[in-house]
Amino acid sequence: MPSTAPATAVGEDQRRDACATREAILKMARRRFSSCGYADVTLRDIAADAEVSAALVVKYFGSKENLFAEASGFEQDAERLLDCELPRLGEHLVRTLLDYHDRTQGDPLVRAVFTSSRPAGAQFRANFEHQLVSRLAERLTGPDARLRAELVCSHLMGLGASRLVLRTKAISAEPKENLVAITAPLIQRWLDGPP
Amino acid sequence: MPSTAPATAVGEDQRRDACATREAILKMARRRFSSCGYADVTLRDIAADAEVSAALVVKYFGSKENLFAEASGFEQDAERLLDCELPRLGEHLVRTLLDYHDRTQGDPLVRAVFTSSRPAGAQFRANFEHQLVSRLAERLTGPDARLRAELVCSHLMGLGASRLVLRTKAISAEPKENLVAITAPLIQRWLDGPP
Image (cartoon, rainbow over all chains, first blue to last red):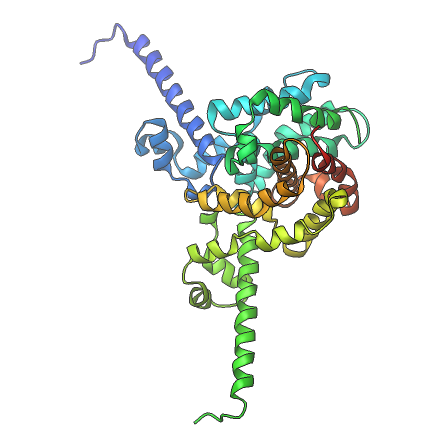
């Protein structure tokens, strides 16, 4: 019979571990889904990345489809990307995204492209528009706010795809701060008003 | 015994038909590979799009891998995209790409992202850099030509992904000529010189 004295502590530890494991799996899933089409990613790959068994991934998420659905939200990413006052938002967006690349080898906007391209991608497209694009558009003043927000996202998406997926030579070699200095003013122009 | 008189003509017709069928299959393959990850596309899908049997696709291309390799070249696309004098190239690039969307439902730059993301994507990344990015960079004068060429491609790629894959609302709804008018000047700035 197990001892009862440390039961609460063990229970909390287990919950904490389970939570950390779950987060680790989600993180690795986001990374994979940022650089590969859905069908090119296997639960086994994600499990290996997260250093757990595939069975554990199934235990936590049920199926690849469920894991995918959970990994493909943009709420947290949008919060981080938009956490800056408007006059400096262009710089913040680019720097946050490049940091995100270096930290996670992933990119939420590129992930949006890969997840939306799926035959069942409509829900993911809606998430992306709702959780990121609309929230950015609401921050902008002046005419064509929605179009300008989409152009900002499309600009960032192209930069992310070049740096993270295509890894074109010069963009990959360029120091992060230079990329920020070069691209942020163009992004800021869309944020400030119509061209 | 077959009659011999029209043999040459029949042979030519057959070659012409075979050639047209081959082109139709390639076109449909490019379309699929412009909007889906490699593993999400089946030979059966492509055959259905091209209105031929899957067996015929196999007969012409041997395997999905071979069809993919052939469909993923950028030579022809690069020729069309770069066929303009430098001072008007920004406008030409955007218009050619948007026309390409409407005509084929595909986009060579977005295709580059999807094909390069594959585990075996190194060759496709090299093709893209060699066949499109380098050729554009060679046309540019002034410092950082290579980086500027990559930024142009990344910009176009983001626009294509937003319009063709994510289909964000405002970009999708915007008349083509407006999109050209809005984005071409930014592209042209990279083409003309460093920021």
